[in-house]
Length: 233
Ligand code: 5RP
Image 1 (tube, rainbow, N blue to C red):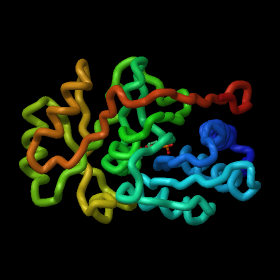
Image 2 (image 1 turned 135 degrees about the vertical axis):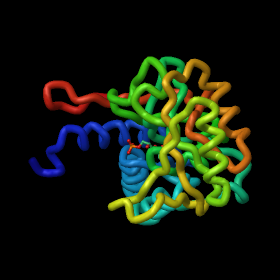
Image 3 (image 1 turned 120 degrees about the horizontal axis):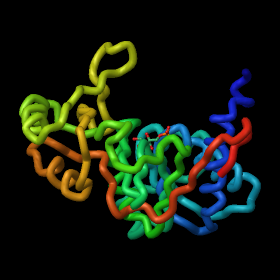
């Protein structure tokens, strides 16, 4: 099967494109991180090139989205130069029925949280495999930790009942290092009954920079699926 004919890739493209089509000329746009939002950034570039979309600026949520924006010709700005974000488009690793999310599969959740929460409208782009009844059922909670605090943070998380695992990079040559120079713990909990409280509790541990639970933040979730080999949004 060629990459172009892969229905999952096609479906991600369709979801990414549907989100890109929601962006209006003159907007300040939060650019999410991941394989789905990569397509959004690509389609924003296409719309700009065709002249159908004008005068947008993007706020990247990671080095990856910054590189993609430059590659596809989406002009960039920083949070120091603007006073609002009109729309942010970002992926997720889990979405519950209340539109609460787990993010950070790409270790970018800290910047993503800043940008996504600032946006007047936050659109989530996922495939249907990301939908869960309860957060934490299929994906651990990513927690970004400053390196000198990794041991006390691991101990504190264990006391909360979590099972933390240091995220390792490709070929396990060393830990994944975030854009901020920190490490990531992937924490499994038996049950996340109260995501609102867990988000706060984790962030209260000294040495934790940010965790990947996003509550009361998403406005719209665009869901892609493959039906009979065809991509649907
Ligand atoms: C990165 C993220 C991503 O948005 C999330 O992992 C989803 O990525 P993908 O679209 O590749 O499934 O939170 O930190």
